[in-house]
Length: 376
Ligand SMILES: C=C(O[C@@H]1C=C(C(=O)O)C=C[C@H]1O)C(=O)O
Image (cartoon, rainbow, N blue to C red; front, side, top):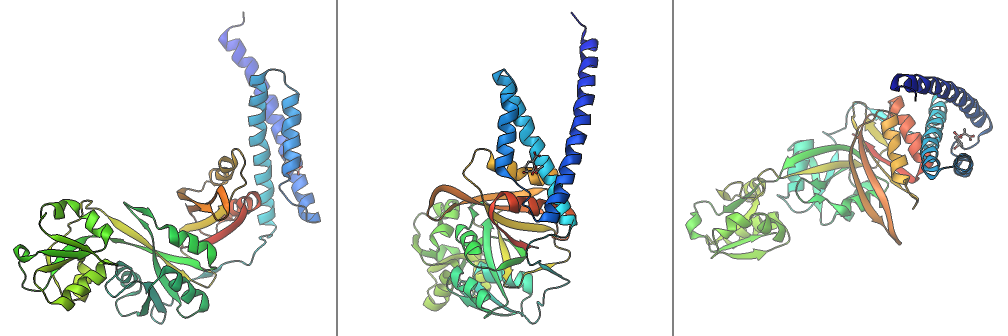
């Protein structure tokens, strides 16, 4: 029986042959890539790849080797395809109207829209991003905000996309697909609710609290210590603050942000009363121009996948292969297609980076309806 060293030496010579053949194969794929660019042929030939994989699997005998060679070839073909995407990008074949890189957003002159009432967290986020004196107005629904951007009634909208404890705001994801608007910025603000009442009120005088149902729930420990208070739910926390001002009754208080309390001239009776103390919400800034800030570092895309085994696995390989760091993935059910999903992916990068261009080229070829939602 041969020793471990001898067997490893034999393995080494087999590896040398594999490497040599690998390079020979990639050289051929590169030539095929040139041929495809010259003739306008599509890079990804799904049927040809399926046939190649079946052929090589039929050439081995044991089941374990069949599965093994199948996996090796899946990777091999994916890599040769990625080489061809790179060739395409280098040849300047981007295939879509490009995003335009800009230096700055026109924050001072822009008209900005947010959803909600005066004192809403969205307004606080808007002021944080555009400044206190920005030219703004508000609408009732997220859809109306999206429409205002699409029609050009406003230049930018500030919309909540994700909360650190409650997760994604699904409606915004769906609207990003429905409307052709683009993300150009984001801002994260802490969500800290207070108990606020009329100036001069003592907390011992309170008998009734108003707020949005979720906000009452998120302060359940604090409110539990005051079990005798009547809890009344209203449409949102800013509206609760407004009601306290209008009622002028010292027995009433609102669970609302410190920002809403200041907008309606209330005093904070107890600060940061949420059960979860580190709650924050991420807001996106959208516009109808296909632009990105030249120093942008994050890209959001969405795409649909064929209902096939390992389609997500292959898709994600484009990030690994191009050394791109994926920071988030969400899925949403697709309308009219039970159990099929649209994926929303965030990753680090700038649309001007060659690695990003290569990855997007590959992702576009191997998924359906890929859209770049923005680079910010
Ligand atoms: C090399 C080609 O391009 C791609 C890669 C393949 C491969 O590596 O075998 C096969 C089909 C294409 O998806 C080709 O079209 O032949």
